[in-house]
Image (spheres, rainbow, N blue to C red):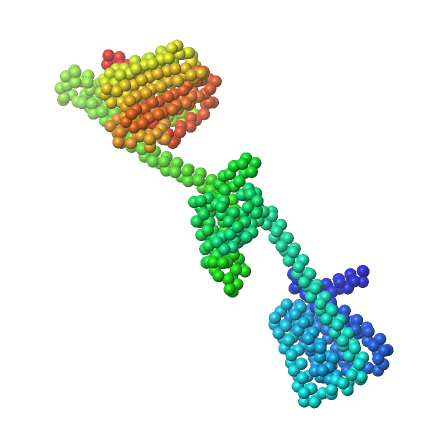
Length: 613
């Protein structure tokens, strides 16, 4: 065993460095070198025995044994240069020359040596090169043709006359041919075994790679049918590989995305170029017996083998790689929503500037205009007219103060600087007071206010001033957007641990398109039904912010032309329910009631009512 190991190591060392990088090429070099070295050395070593058996050799026999040096030289030529095909061509040429020489001396085409010409192309076949096989076949056929011509013209002695003279050489030739053929067969078997194990190792390597990849690899035939899919599909799609073969994978693709899926595969097959597509595919959840769709990206291209002659473009096989891109799609959606939100914010900024320019300019113009009239000494104004102008200046200033206070309150709520002061108080008295404050305004508009209190309302812990502000804003909106002859109903009741206050009117209402944006600052509903009313659009936003600070909630139900119902729920004890002091997240997708006017300062309202009274 140690001798064979030493021989194997010696042969491996003779392999040229350029061939050692590839296992199959190295095996071919070993198959070429080993039999030539071992066979030649063994034959040379047996030459003394041949002499002892044969006696004095003939010139031909000496030439045959001398030729055994040629395979050794050719083997070392390959070892030093790495020129595999050249070594095979030289070996075929040398073997053909030897066979032709022996056959020429032993009877021509009928010689025992002529059979060796068959070995020449067989030996060249081990090179796996058509060029080498063609050259070797040409050498053998040329030698056979030359021997045939010489024999036909009687230029060579007949084989029968030489049978006795070269009997030992003939026997040696037959034995050596059998041994040489055996060596060729063993070399072919060795190469075949090496190729098989290399192919198996390569397949196992790719199989291991496909099994451990998170991306799914698939191979598709005609019409997108799946011929192969990697095991990663089971984890990604939640089904067995067998279920996805054929059109099983296609059946999982979302119906709306199937055209894009098939188009990518068809384009890759017919155009012969790489294609990509993104689509949704159903993922099964066996544990929860449910399914959902996830986004995948598929990159596909035709197989290289599919470009061979005789294969139609539409029949080319396509290999595809599928990757889960749900997270990226979610990020793109979030980015799109953020962009839309930014655009809405910019639009809101424009609406704010437009609204504020109107809300601030109108009272300021009145204040400046009437004050100039009062200070103009050239105008002789009677006391009644002066009082009227002074009253208008006062009302415009109060309205301007209300708008500014509303903006400041909204700013404080959004930055978390607005604080409420909880204290125990009776909500019934507060609700009645707010109704009384706005009763005169309602009578002037021809609107009836009805108050419905459910029995004895419990005492609550909250900010009394904030509740006043909430109710005045809601009542002001209800009165403003209710036509003459309408009604406003204020009701309050206790539901478990919450005080429920409802303000309902039968006014113009709010359209369905504007309801989703309820509570957004500075928003006013469409001009079709609210532009005839003034307001900054802050009232309902402030109401929502104050309710949120108490830990409550607000719901609005409205229908265009039929009225609006606002329901607020406040905890009886807001100290245990309200959130910690932090910026109030005012819902940007909700909107204020049409043209909501801010009635911020209760004291100012009371003074106006007293003056009017």
